[in-house]
Length: 151
Image (cartoon, rainbow, N blue to C red; front, top):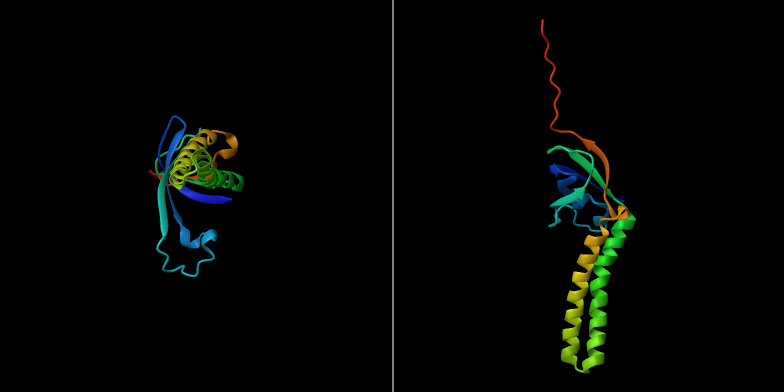
């Protein structure tokens, strides 16, 4: 499982815009690299939009969890679909035209088609429950308790 802390930027009608920052140097996937201190990748920053029914406030911090199955599924979709498009596009144009130039063109067209197909399929499939991120816990940073003592 991959866990990530995110800060809420805005929440409107069950849709939250989050800002996340992950330290790649201390992530378990970068453990094989011996150049921890001088890693040029450093911090990864970005924004993420998720659907969540629980009302959130700007500045609130939440933890997200992406299951290994969802992560593996989307990685296969993103990498395997364009690869299959490359292979089948090249095979199809070689079979139709018997020319290397057309085969190269078919390979490029198949790769681009596979890429756009993967984008379309990922956006359609992320709406299902098994592909959603899970909010583990929330922590309020913006709420302060003030106690007024009167005589």
